[in-house]
Image 1 (cartoon, rainbow, N blue to C red):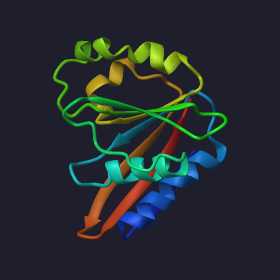
Image 2: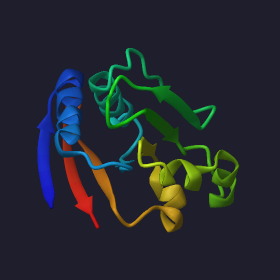
Image 3: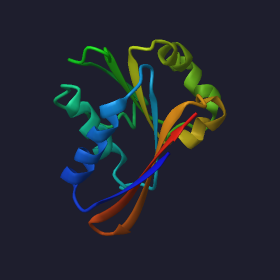
Length: 144
């Protein structure tokens, strides 16, 4: 399934992100693809806000952040930014396989192409395309 949205502001991007949670399955991995400044972290902030997380910041320099949630189905949100990963082997230090196995976790991965070969086949891929200074095309694909 593929759904295309057009966002003209950060607030619209956050609202689009919240729509993912409407029919979210346990143990979901959300992969965010797009250029720098395309809206990936803003999208992540929208999901976090819907889960009762007041402040989500990009984990660019520490790779991964963990947030407890106020949600009955999802107990923890893991937000990964793999921009600085050069080798997929580097992610092993973060026990990503174990985190994915826990069905009460929601995992959001920015720059997932860095570990494409170890991503689960069942996931949500979100592609961001900058079409103007204030406009983004956001395409959501449900895989598997």
